[in-house]
Image 1 (tube, rainbow, N blue to C red):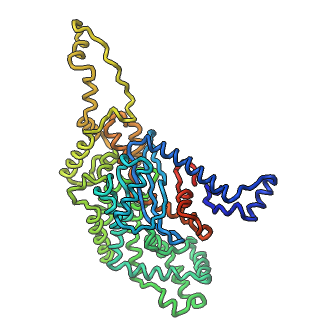
Image 2 (image 1 turned 30 degrees about the horizontal axis):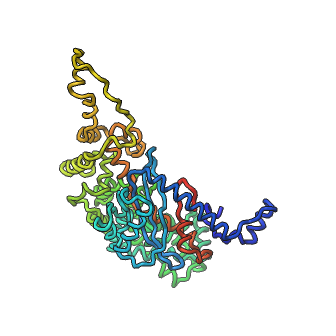
Image 3 (image 1 turned 90 degrees about the vertical axis):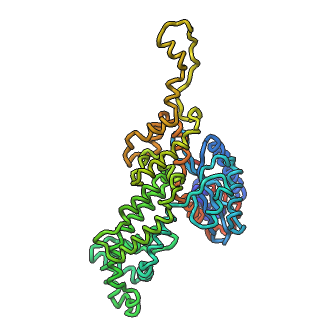
Length: 503
């Protein structure tokens, strides 16, 4: 119970807990705080060994990482790993959540990352690390310091582009809307509920925007627009809102209109972030299709757009184009684009709208597939038997031809990397609703080289959300009831493994 619910170990010393256990089982001797701690450590070591065993059978592993600060002002680094197992299921685990008291320089971060993967015995297996856009962590994942590729968190990159759009004019609206939402006295909150009932509006509570919460501006605008007349009515009641406060809190008609006009754009951007934040499904292969979808559709100017909305779209579009390097010659070599080519749903790369770029990308896929050994694939189900002896004097035409050309003549044609890639690209792509992993599970034996590549690249998360979600769990672990929890025990309590015991 303590492990699964992430409770403080001191719960075993609580009077209420002891009364509960005594009621359930009067003669049960409750273990001491030290005993529970030791048991947790033993379970952690056991699950750690099970995870090491699981990782030892995996060819390629992806990482995500981020740093954060606890209530104790202690700085921590979290590293998660992600891989696809033999059944083509996405697996995730927390490798570590450790104290990081050194300065967060790129050298120190790279050193900690290398130490972590070495301790787990996966140095040669790491294909890429996903992180935010901070200069120090970007530099830490440079090829001169680590052996794996660097992937910037798409959600963070998209948010930076959105913030660039906000900086033109919308920040004024965000600030004004934030002041209004923040006015949440007990009297005002009750008055808003009453107005919602009178006006037959949904009983939604207003949402405050937060710089560190993606999509919070979209949610704040949407809820305010929905509740506009109820909010306005509360502000006009002098028994609830003083005149001086109302003058400060009331929004201009221009602001209300802009919030309503920009809502469809923010909704599309929110949808992109939500889709990319999944952990159980492939996400990185969606990065560039979504990027080009935003650039070619949702961020394009419409005749109905107001000047402010058009300005916002253009700024976000230009920023996203630059940050995602969509015009770069290096685009086909980026892990996100390689993964897109290995996702059967996107392999035709129609979003590029350039035959030259598509040919370059296809050439890159052939280059990557060429050195891959198809025999080493886990999905190679065919067993090659020893060729039967054939009498050279035999006049059987079929047997003679097999002898002359070789018993593996047809197999060599099938296993040729060029033909494999061509056959893969030639087939009709499956529906976008198809699971990329399910498709590869069914077709891996047909494309042995590409399936090995896919199993590595498709395991890379599209965002650093997995490591950031650990912060939320850690917030439960390192709360005010556990400010004495040591950094070592934080790692034990937070070393959670998906489908294993939560510690």
